[in-house]
Amino acid sequence: MSVVKELDPGAKEALSRSGRDIMRQRSRVIQLLDAAERVGISPLRAGRLHAFAYLADVLSPVWHLPAFDGKILKIEGGPHYPDLQREIDRLVVLGILKVAEITYISRPDEGARIDGLYSLNLHSPKLSPILAALGALSSEQALDPRDWEVQAFFVDLAGALATVPDDELGMSATMDATYADERFDHSNVIDFGSWSTNVHSDNLSLRTVDRFQKFLPQGAMLSGGEKLYLYASFLGRRIRAR
Amino acid sequence: MPGEFSDVIPGVSESEVAGAVQSLTKIPVTALEDHERFMVAVRSLVESRAQSGWQHEGAEDVGVFLLARYPREVGERYGATAVSDLIATNDPILGKMFFLNRDASSGRGMVLPTTPNEIVEWVIDQKLDDLPMVVVHRNKKLLISRTRGAGGDTRNDLIRDKAPVASVDEIYEALKVSHRALLLTPSICPAGVWESGRSAQYVPGPFPEKAIQRELATVLTSWFHGIVKAEMEDSISIGRIDIRLLRPDTEGKFAYWVVLELKVIKSSHNAKKKVKPKAVKPAENAAVVAEGIRQAAAFGKDRGAEPFLEIYDLRKDKTDDILAHIVVVNELNKCALKPKCRVWPLFGSASDARIAGWP
Picture 1: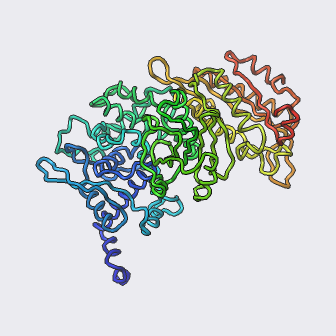
Picture 2: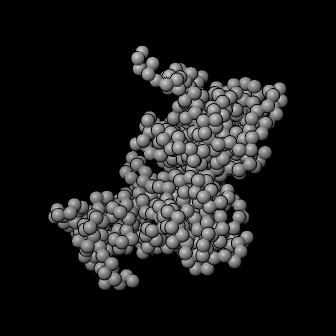
Picture 3: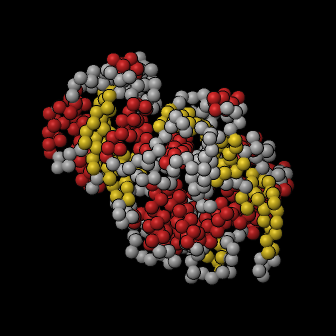
């Protein structure tokens, strides 16, 4: 009890369940934008950032990582995570992210959605220690060593998505095999992670990635990174063919 | 499950998947370290421009590429603007300086901030000298790489204005160039081939095959980027393949083309400084080569590929013809598909190389 009393309000909030969820979301945003910075595709429009977050979730088994959400509400225009957007906005207020060219996008039946160009505020003195704690700088500095792996996955995925034409990055998520699955109409939740007993059969994106092996000789192996680049090529071909 | 392909993936056609796999020879080599990956990517970009006759370029001769951890951060210091997918676009690359990601695909670019002769000094003055750097000289057809930054060692590569073809002769050419440029003497050899400070005594490093394998995989990947995929080491029931090359067949599926087994022959085993190294007898070296022939032939048969055995000779006295040893000859005679065997001399000093007739 005495320990909790000594903590400042921010730290106390962080210890609560909702506080932990908030910290997870914020960490995820910072890690995603760090990966985008490294591959030179930052700043990202909100739609592209949410698309990146979704693809990172649905493709996480390629890297043998658990999904962050494991489900997505399928809506017109591509994935959108309200919880993630709330923390993006808060991180802007905290000076850790920068936003430019803020606009509103009208949405049928759902009001409007804020849009902008988001990036890490590389001049923020708070950023470097946060990146270090999240394993973005080195595995030794990470509070959780697994974050180093998560970051490596995000950077390779961002690199793969950088091969998709810039103005079509946001669309890449809607071309994803799971999101585009016509068995699910708009306004339905696609539960690609949590109700699955076998992620290799229920996650269509992962099944597509696995299918690449069919075109290789026996014994040939693809690295996790190569699978992501091939999947980005698959998405790019779908975008061009639409 | 991976490996089970009979089921249909709802909404996904086989042709879409097959089309994506065709890009396998063009995607970045994720097994390489960032600076190696960057060099391969820049070379591919520059040669694609050279092979199209430098279309869309002006009169400029030089272009500079720097690998930046955060391209935007570095670029913004100099007012550089965003660039994306230089391979797919026609944006000029000469007369420019780029701060790019490890795939040389996106980042920031700007007009060269100084004259071509002063580029290296400018980079050092700006404290960017820890960034891996590649300078392109169109007129000299030269690519000068500094993998450890502006102050580090340089490596020169010829810019090929004709695309390479996937042929056995071309592999030989790649091996020849890598031998001369990257392996021949200790000053250019990758770390690990020779024991540090003991190359003049012909003491090999602890794992010379590994060091050479990595260098060759990088060279072959860079040489054949876009047409062949090079993979390193594969453990299968019959052992290991050091490097394997895959290329697409007429049906769009990839098949093994060539497997390369690497062996090192040496005068002594590895030993740290002040420890007397244990000598390696000629029969031991011959046994290593015979084993290499066995492995290469078995791999070739198992994978339906042409087997190559590349022997790197780290011996001080290279007069003994290792391929004439009876165990080697017998092993070759047993093979239905005989591996192509080549011996590449490596010298413990530049003077030894000169004495042996290497300029």
